[in-house]
Length: 196
Ligand code: HEM
Image 1 (tube, rainbow, N blue to C red):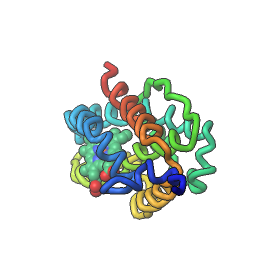
Image 2 (image 1 turned 120 degrees about the vertical axis):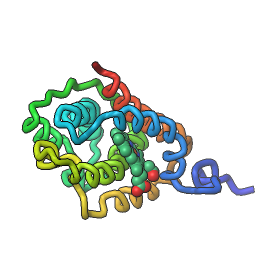
Image 3 (image 1 turned 180 degrees about the vertical axis):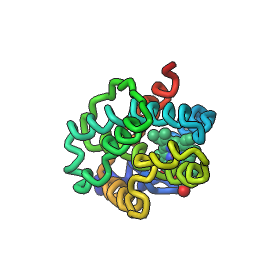
């Protein structure tokens, strides 16, 4: 009998055989909780919009640093076009906000990098939704400082990330190797939202 290929034990054996669907299902509850925490903010009010950016920056900045330390460019050669630390710091500087940076976990292998990237790149989908709402706000302090939310709009960053994510499917022996880092990334955002 032939030795089963490693993919036979991983995502390819599932009914919805994509890493994206595995990650989405595994983190849906975390996303819903985060959505509820951030959704309580009225982003049309400058102070609450600033708080929204501070929460995002508290987790995003250290996570992006961890990704760089884990050589994210080896997986995503266009990382330079995806990193949003500068954009969010620009918005915060103009709004007078100061993020309290959290400690992001080290990312020991490519699946930890991919799980973390799933959360950060996926957050662009929510950002596009929020941007549409913010564009209707009357306060120009809010609507003129959207470098973070607007970042990457009009470029196919999400589909191109998904193509790279799925290209690693057959090498994944244990789904938890990618799910746990994604959960940890969500957890850092939730921790940031809980900071007073
Ligand atoms: C108020 C805050 C947020 C709202 C309203 C929101 C809303 C959404 C919406 C509407 C989508 C689906 C978009 C689509 O399929 O076209 C989405 C996807 C996603 N969001 Fe959020 N989001 C928020 C915050 C965040 C944050 C802070 C993160 C992580 C840092 C995040 C991570 C994700 C991920 C990973 C996906 C992709 C899920 C998938 O695989 O389909 N979101 N979000």
